Amino acid sequence: MLESYVVLSRKYRPKVLEDLIGQEILAKSLKSCIDNRKVPHAFLFHGMRGVGKTTTARILSRCLSCVGEHGLTNMTSHPCGNCHSCLAIDRDHHMDVMEFDAASRTGVDDIREIIDSSQYAPILGRFKIYIIDEVHMLSKSAFNALLKTLEEPPQHVKFIFATTELYKVPETVLSRCMTFQLKPVSPNSIAKHLQIIAQKEGYSLDQDASEVIAEESEGSVRDALSIVEQSMMIVSNSKTITSDIVFEMLGRSTNREIENLLHLILSSDSRSALKIVEDLTSKGADPFILYKNIQNCLYKMIVESTNSSENQKNCQSIQNLLYLWQILLKQTENMKNAHNPIQVLSAAVVILSLTASFQNIGDLFIKEEESPEKQILNKVESKFEGITISEIE
Image (tube, rainbow, N blue to C red):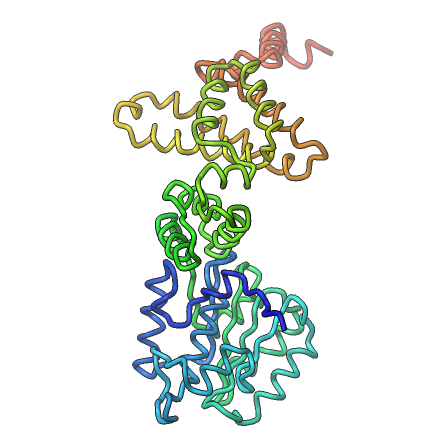
């Protein structure tokens, strides 16, 4: 019988609070709650995709359910991982730890099922724990049905909610939960973590490649592991992952190519800039990723210009760069929805090049006192100046 393949994000999913990547404050807070026996009845974890919300919920459920190898341990911030409760949670077989996906179970009937079952005592553990993922997807009636139980739950019940869109959760629910934010993980932390994982898998991941992947993941550990896993499939023979392989796989361009392209745009050399865009896309570069890379490179230039004491004196140049960045921001939706994104990218390059030709961005705007409409109005006012209404009649 063939063994089922387990993806890296599941294979190396953290089992204890100390293993959470880049969430030190969260881990410290949860440890304090558990060790001091001040565990609230409802937790809510929120943050972007892939930062560990569901993983934290499962770790917390292990902490609350662990009984130790001899069955005598009270809830602990350091679950043993070997007792029947820990093993059952790891295998998703624990009868008292129930995980629901609110994206597929959004109705009030689903919540009533939870409310009804919460009245009964736990079978194996000390608590009945309900993990509701993507809780913001619940309907309004479902939220309303949950409120009373959420405010005064039975002593043996704990709720753990997770969401990527906190603003969609009603305030009446938020006020009944202890809320924790999981922050995007820093690129340095992700890069170090990826190198450890690659080494465990028998691969060599060079520093540049890990940094490129960390930057591409935008703070999501799961996304970063997915990219590493895909890279491993490509280099299964050599077992060496380099930045060139990552760039080629992602359809990205090197930093040098992006910086060269942006330099041509800022120099108003639209013809050469379009030629580079054509060359990069013909090599397989994704137009949207190329567009995003230009935007990121421009943003870094703005930050460097702002932090430089020499460039702070030249506020006008920073203003120009910010205006170009705003143009890129406004065109982002067009890039996402375009039938032919290469055309939108090329048009954006031309617009940026033409706009960059103005030394002073204020030259793009017609001052009100110099506008044609204002000039005509001034002439009319001067012609009729001093004339009363009776004289006109």
